[in-house]
Length: 288
Image (cartoon, rainbow, N blue to C red; front, side, top):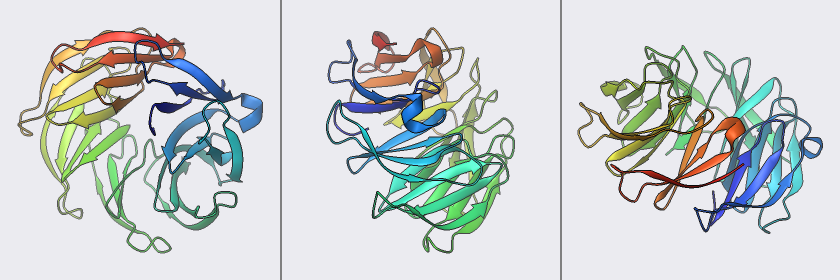
């Protein structure tokens, strides 16, 4: 997300651009339909004035999102397999694709992405997070994979860290990776030395942890049918749930914007949660 404009992948409804400058009243300002993108929209990130979106069958789409209300597809790359997750940084895009691969593309010219390398993954990548020159990729029952990207044309698999659940999402802050581990909840892992990650602590959640975002001493977990859970992670060895917000739909993703958590809730749209007091979160708006 950049500024007050949030891009959202809306599955078979295409891609949407939502103004969240007033979190209590999110407003749709633009979008691209299913026919414009050629597939089911599975993930999108904003970076450098562009939205980088992947669909199940059309691969990577580069969308000029600089003008509110007028997103335009300006580039495309057809990846092999089904694309389901994406990250973009420093002129590179990283696409997690099925059946099991991480693909790296040079996007310094957004209109003509070029694949420069790829690596096999242990399972279908559910998320891609870049921290430093490492990629952190949750791969369901195979756990969390870490890749060294210091030479983008020759990436190296560093380690697979097994988790007890199905790793679906990850956030990395400093030397800690926070893994949304499906039915096993939230796991905290020390990744200061990527080849030897070490579990710090974990806490089960009542639902299935799909995604996580972290701000300060709190982690916010999209817990599928059990809403958003707030976890105090100030003591990494003993993370503790301190609050939750019940939501309609299935909480599948979360992003933080100032004092607001935006939850992608499936068919029930985007829910805006005021987290200015983390221990007392309140839903203040939604867009569906």
